Length: 88
Image 1 (tube, rainbow, N blue to C red):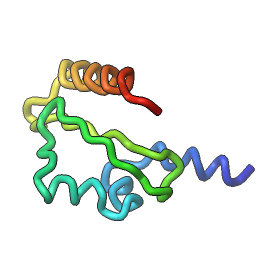
Image 2 (image 1 turned 90 degrees about the vertical axis):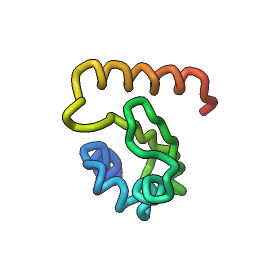
Image 3 (image 1 turned 180 degrees about the vertical axis):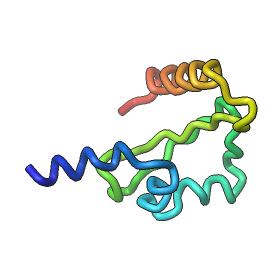
Image 4 (image 1 turned 180 degrees about the horizontal axis):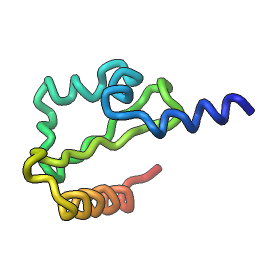
C-alpha cells in the first residue's frame, strides 16, 4: 500500500521537481530550442521509467504578464485535441 501513496505524491510536484525527476528532460528541451514556452506549444516527453507515467505533456503558457483564464482554456483545448488523436 505504501507504494500507491508514493505514486500519487508525484502529482503535486511543480515543474522544477518534475524536471529533476526526468533528469533535466524539460530544461534540455528548452535549452536546445525545441520549445520556448510560447502559449499553445506542446511537447510530449517520455519519462523512461523515472516516474510512474510513461509520458508527460509540457504546455507553454506564454509570458506571465499575458497569462489569463483564456490562456488556460486555450492551452487545455490544445492538449485535449492532441490527446484525442494520440494513440496510448
